[in-house]
Image (tube, rainbow, N blue to C red):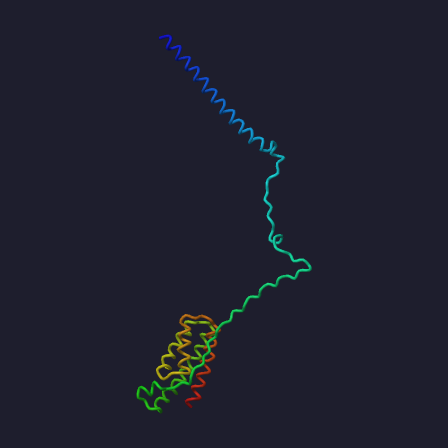
Length: 195
């Protein structure tokens, strides 16, 4: 039994030396790696200058033409061209009243009653236009549009339909100004036509 204990101790000693040898070998390899890394680092951090990437300003990166070069002209922006309504309508006719069975004389009387109504609305539309109250302009043109389209078609009637339709969604004051100008014009034309 003593023999077995001695052999066991001997084996343990051999295993101990083998493990120690392996660990020392790994330790020396690790030391070499660390030493290599340490060598690549500067030894005195105070002497080390920080690494700063150079950034060029926009002025430095843009091309400055030489005296002999002509500067490239900047493209001029294209002007935005607004398409204003043409407002080119045929003369007003009271054909709808005639279709309902009214005489020509009776139809003309209805149109003559329409003219002062339109003139009254023009004054109110102008006030709403000055305030740029598109909702009010739409409401006013809607009410007079119904009267005009019930009596006939063409001229002021067609203009009011187009203008009112635009005012439901459009908010361009120049377009509304054009419609207003033609509303005044076609009302005068209607007055000439029926007097």
